[in-house]
Length: 450
Image 1 (cartoon, rainbow, N blue to C red):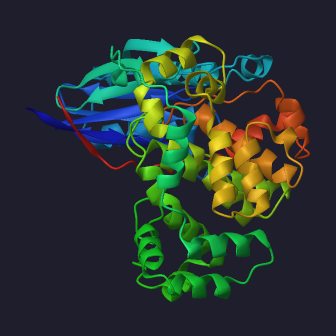
Image 2: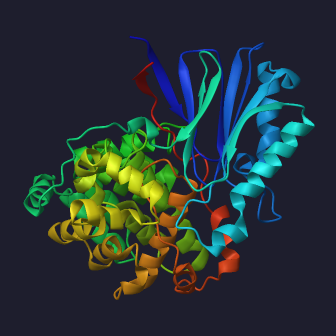
């Protein structure tokens, strides 16, 4: 059996490699992916673009996010690696209108404008486009096999479909048993959640709690030094982390480390790639923190924590989504329904209900439990509607622009109303999209049979 590695190319970044047994993948919704390869140089790469052009006039911090600035950087890197661009070929994918479809999607036409800039720059460089599948209404996967430089475009999650007849619809008793069997969140993590919920928290209190738990300490330090949050200098103690990272980042890392194991154990149902649930949670948390900071709607650390834990109910339902995957997948693609509506149809319960029960059982702060329950319907929240609205918006942005991490669809029919809860107007949507972090999701390379 021939084994080949898979490498996920996150949005706002690119990867270039020489001929080797590796498949590059970019999961695309509204984003646009560009694969360029050269048989002569035996080199290929994928660029994963988020937006057509920078929104603000300030200097661009991450040019790879935008077609207008990222394409020149990507092509220059290919030339530096030894590619003669005029002999290269390109494939383009993405730029979809990922439903439910509404006038806001059509007005923005983010994917269409991004694809247009890509095509223009490729034409200027005389690079032949041999395959192009842009627009439409579904997310897809752009794949470049570095071993033979073949490029393919498939619906995201298509590789997980099969014709199994053993679809299992769990009973309420089975779902309750799955919740009961889930290891409770560590007490030290719960204490930290409550400290953060106080908003005016003391970082030394948090550091003191972390030091008491060797497991959480070790997990935090491991995450400090991971590819996702890597720093030039290794971090070897909680005190060291506090000095070099600062209190805000340390708090995020502690909470992320505490819940990492829950999401990473879920890999067969919602996740379209290895670690999909966890990376969606991390991304939502980062965007929620940014929105909270920009709008002043709530304390950024609280928003980060709420974003991180909003989908905790999916950890319980993941195994049952795996068993109903063909039905779940096809309904998500063919019907304009939220993912939680499909959950109700197939499982008789949705992840917000299950997550809320977990949050109550684990004695989460009430505002956090409310966010878990209503992050798809923030107008129903009563204790902390602004926190819930922040997480709704962050979850929406992740689902639209980092699509392919997990099976998900978020309703936008009341987007104007939900933006108004944060003092935002629809016209600022481009600004919100520009706040999405790029290059955040460095997936572990996985092995697959070829």
